[in-house]
Image 1 (cartoon, rainbow, N blue to C red):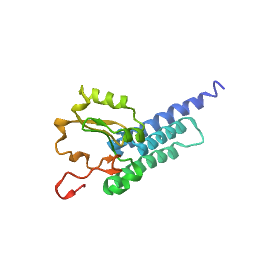
Image 2: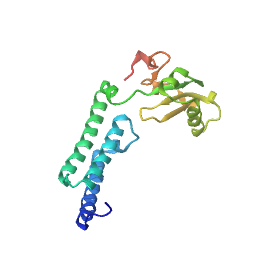
Image 3: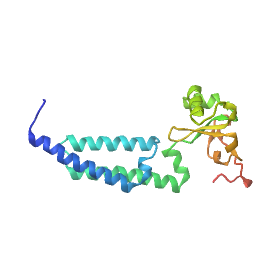
Image 4: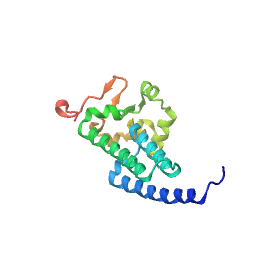
Length: 185
C-alpha cells in the first residue's frame, strides 16, 4: 500500500521528531562512551537504539512514552555496563574482549593474526597509516577491544608498560608487567 492516510503520515512526522529529539537528549546525558568506537556490547545497544527508534516511528502499536522509556532503558543499560566495567575490571571480560598483540618488535605473530582473523595486509595498512615505512620500525601493533589497530613505534615504546593488559597469543596470556614488583593494575 502506497498511502494510508494523512493522519498516519502526521503521526510519523510528530512522533518521529519527538522520538529523535528524545534520543539525542538521552545520548547526550548518557555520556561520550555511548557514542565512542564500538565494542560488541556497544554495537548491540546501538543497533537496539536504532531498531527502537524505527519502531517508535513506524508502529502505531507503540506509544511515544513506551518508546521513550525503551530508549532510556537501553542507554541506561549501556551506562551501567560501562560503570561496572570501569569499577570492576574482571567484569570487562564479559562485556569486552581483551586487546591482542599482533606484532611484536617488527615480527607479525601468525597465531594471533589467525585467532583474530586479521590479515597481514590489514596490519601493514595500519602501519602505513601510522606513518611507518618499515615493519622493523614498529615495536607493537595491538588489536584493540573496539576492533581498531594501535601502532607503537620503537621510539615511542619506552618500557612497554602500556601493553600490560594486552593478550599475547604466543604465551596464551597477558604480557608480563614491566613495572617493578609486577603491578599490572
